[in-house]
Image 1 (cartoon, helix red, strand yellow):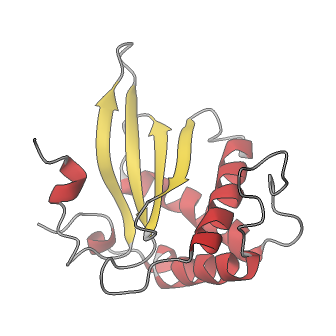
Image 2 (cartoon, helix red, strand yellow; image 1 turned 60 degrees about the vertical axis):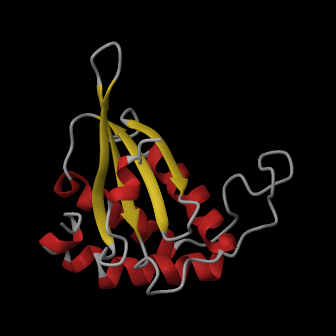
Length: 160
């Protein structure tokens, strides 16, 4: 069986950042860009807690789908199974540099969030009590301050 592209990335050298994981062209000719929003260094830093990652998922997905200038381009936001980050799929042929501002705003929103977590009710979510807002805010602030606000080339290009 052929190895999929994401399993060919050297995770031992991968840094936190924003990477283009793949580009796909739909049958109608639209380009979809999948971004790897890597919040922790794989195999070198602890993964995010499941509850924090679930909270980040709810907050980021809600924020992105309500942001007037991007909501029509948002296809998907969701966690990686390894709990080291998230995937963001947007319509368009985009580069990491095109969304640094969007991700900065998204993670600032999460870091500063207070109130009820959107969709955190038994009616709206399959595991609504599996949330940790305090940890989600701390992880979002860490990613914002240590990565997004000081992005370098190595935070946007997969290691060779």
